[in-house]
Amino acid sequence: MEEEKQTMPTYFEAKQLVTPGELLAEGEYHAGENTYVETGKIFASRIGLVDLDNKKVNVVALRAFYMPKVGDVIIGSVKEVGFNGWTIDIKAPYDALLRASDVLSRPFKPQNDELCQVLDQGDLIVAKIASYDRAHDPQLTVGEPGLGKITRGQLMQVTPTKIPRVIGRKGSMISMIKQETNCQIILGVNGLILVTGKDQENEDLAMKAIRKIEEESHTTGLTDRITQLLKEEKAKREEQKQ
Amino acid sequence: MSEKHEKLINKKGIRLDGRKADELRPLKLEVGVIPSADGSAYIEHGKNKILVGVFGPREVHPKHLSRPDRMVLKCRYHMAPFSVQERKSPAPSRREIELSKVIRESLEPALFLELYPRTGVDVFVEVLQADGGTRCASITAAALALADSGLPMRDLVVACAAGKVEDSIVLDLYDAEDKLGDADVPVAYMPNLNAVTLLQMDGILSPEEFEKAVNMAMDGCKQIYPLQKEALKTKYLKVKEETKDEEIEE
Image (cartoon, each protein chain N blue to C red):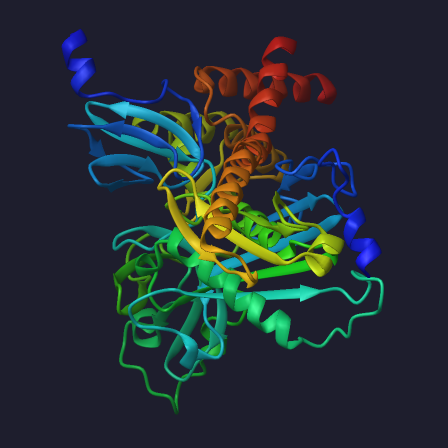
């Protein structure tokens, strides 16, 4: 064991806060997220917390932005209404395109259809990224169940890197919040979250829980604490009603 | 003039502002000072006070400036009209345009430009108060602001100057030394990769003196680097500590 350590050193403790450029490991390790390799050494490329996952060195970034990936469900707002589609702001380095024919699900004729009656500037949509590569802006689609224009609910924004924590292990966190607050929650991978409930009280409660997750995303036993928070808040409310 | 010259460094080797030859000015760094920017930093380096804001990566305007194979870094170094004794015209001067370029080129090697084609990042450097060595302080702060914006970086860039004043090589020149001294050598440096990203010289130095000045400036950079890292960590440690407090309350 010790021999192995000597040939393959790491230079960090688990969950240590590292800054860009910090040397993390040497030897037979793989560079994971937010790291890079230079002359056989692995360095951090973002500020975050290091983790070693079976020879793979990962940095869980504390600050990052969303990069589009095909298949991601995102929430965006209409930035511009064009001739045969819309430009959508998806909180990424690139603006996304949504084609009119995709929304209308029939051939689009400019003389018959007024695009801003379908989606106008500032409207929010849930969409999926249909295509994206280095050379082309991401293209969106709303042609699947659950996608399309948002008509009600509340929107909130978190750092995109925190979305996996909001989902939890195998969706445990998000399903728990949904159950406790009776809210429908749509998570945009780009950091936008839509909360729709029967009344504002429940929506506020769900949002409060998500805020707490964002702030304490790096701590352990979070699901239990969030459950407790939700139960306490609900109990408080019951008392007030009586 | 010659009288002033004699006073810059006294017989004990102490400079006009009380520093030794290889001593830095007091340094204060802060990260995340502009909430509306994607990343920001503030530096106080001696009497220099500089604010840096970073926006992006985002679409480039005008569009023809974007590159199909990489991200473009745009940098604007600007001195506030009140940053110096005599009012400085707010219009960009020849010197400011040059410094914008120099700062941009010293930061570019630290970024993975090829990862985000067709986008651009804007770095706005605003000098609120200037007292010599602003380009170095600007680079140090701009690197912090870039790291704070969440852009992946190879390393933080640190910059520091050394120069020749009255026949001796000194570290981190301030305004009077810069103007009355013989030479100024600003160096920007990536400490983990041991790579120099900026090296300029203004004045006349012998090869030996030049080498001594470069080494001294790099040592200065190595002294600033821990402070820079600390400043970046402080912003995110705050979050950590707050949650710890809450846990105790519970």
